Length: 450
Image 1: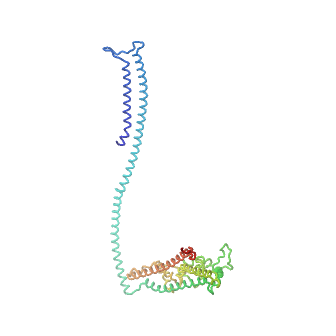
Image 2: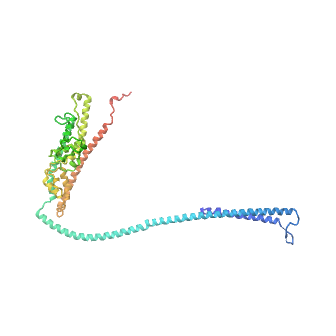
Image 3: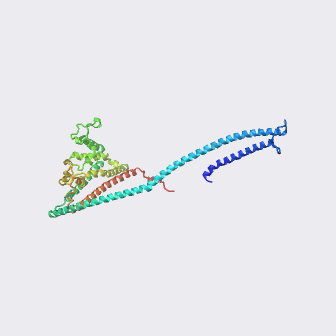
């Protein structure tokens, strides 16, 4: 039996039961009326009411009471049945209305889903395909027009190139870009060598302080080294307005350019392509900036008696271990600063290249560093506005330029590798310091096996 038939089944059963009950009540009433009446043969129907009291009259009275009770009960049952039928019909009507509204809502959702499916799988692909066709047709038309224009321009350019090639072959004009690069390249080796020597000397000087070398400011201990740092501060970097005006700037520095310079690595290192260390103040500034960034490994000296003891020797070896780690970490700022040391002696050739890029003369060094040469060759040369003029008419110059760019790219990769190498060394030092914090088991404390 389906769900719809099951819903209709209670209503049908109710109506059948109602009709059966109604017929039964009618039958009882009819039987009562039959008992109260008799029919004589050949005459009309007569009642048994001719005597004052008899058994038939008593039966007639009882039948009349039963009839009245049955009629009353039947009326009440009919009214109750009518109410139940009315309530049942009302419930069925509400249920039908609710299901109809749900069906209408589901129909609307089905239509929306159908429309979405129709758009996604029917209309949208067709419109996209049509759009692709239109774009393809437009692109083909544009390509044909551009091909015609390119053909005309190619013919004109080729004629011009042939004319310039003939003139170049006649005059044997050298290529300016590769020749200039080759000339300047001779000073890069000198600048790199000078940079390496400066880094080695910086490391030697700073370690002499930590090793309490004779003749250095750290020979007698950390107090003398810090005293010298403070005297340098008062001479060059002291700010009269610093520390709320509570300072020891008496008298204040005469050259205001270096006030607070010991705390400005960006201005005096990173923003400068060549650092003029011929100026003693600038040299002291660069040294102090690196010291402030990395710290000074100054320490008090150990007496000979203390050095002969086991704890003293351990302290002495720990200090040397610290100095080695400190020197490794300091190679990173040392490399960055060393690249900016002068020494290439290529200022005449580099000046024309950087002036063409619009660099002010005050920012161009007469003795460029390795950093300034690399910056000029890899950045400034492209900002002149005339970089490709010479290569337009000479294919051989283009090939030479490709070789030059590959060489500079390789040099930059080498510089990056060198910096990465020092960074990895610094990381190894950091890891070693973390390892030192892990206690090592004492072999003397291990109990023998039994």
